[in-house]
Image 1 (spheres, rainbow, N blue to C red):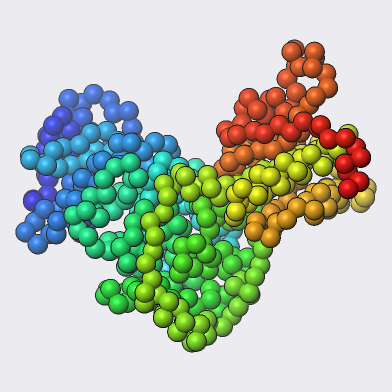
Image 2 (image 1 turned 120 degrees about the horizontal axis):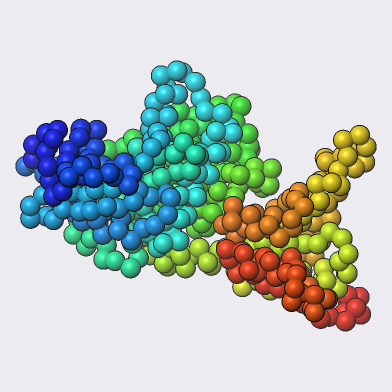
Length: 477
């Protein structure tokens, strides 16, 4: 199909300019043909349909048309309209401001500089949050790469190009019609190589590839062009990033290599868990994976190769269901006027919640007043207070069995306890909040909402209020 000329009118839209001519589609800036004001900047995406183009272009158009209409939120472009396959297939959507990650990487390469650790963590967390938003809507992107990630000026990421995506509630047209591994060779996950689609951890693998490239300037598995080359990631680990860049911290290598684990079950269980680690690096648990500087031994790769030869990945549950199975659980621990029985009851409630959710992450949080710290007294300095309360939180959690869970500890400063808890839950995609119930002053609660009541009313997730009901003598068991 020929490129559309500037000024061409099509189904009520007018072509302003061609912004991009790619291998899969042309992107045009458009406005309304009748010159009425547009609600936001718009682009029209028209798939290539020349004799040499494969069927995946049209199938990809159908997939994107199907999925883009049902996705919501700031992490995807807003859908406007679509043309039919008989006349001219096209998609009109929001034109989002910002730079793609590929443009950012190209700038680093041209300037011969590297992204700072803070920038890597910030961009990685933005990508993880965007992916988590998709997964909550039962969609896996399955083609995340630098060209398909746009960093908005306000800091959040917008994901583009859903032509290879999969929605759990819609027919998977690519799996049905092409019946082959589809994806971009440098970023495709191992399970996609063997034809399994619909696992949200495939997107986590792709984010890991982008983090690796941001950190080192290199691709962890190169850019293979054959199925044999792509299959190597089923058993091979990349060169440790710290071997290529000495100033990278161990925690960042730990995060990146966990994303790139050959088996999906050994990666982060959800993109929210990944974002949490990138935003709280001091809480990342460092293992040998983060410390290593030498590559994985030959015999380890050989054992994995034998295992991968007969490997059959199992389809994952619905993305939203999988997220619920491995949630981020938050417990709000009071730091004053809390009885031993209250602290014990909270711990028992957390233990029960973790016990039925293997792999869930626990965030232990307390809120202190900003007026407690002093700039002149070392004993009450901000640093000393935080260390004191962090120690108390760790002591509170010691009796818990956390062998199958990651735990982190956070001291928040705010004069509004309820708002601080709610903001933390929103910012970290917390699935459930466990906190003590205020059982005193019931008459007063009719007029003034207590902290637990305010949290329960405003929190974006489930809130479990734990009532102190245990006799004190139980604490002596």
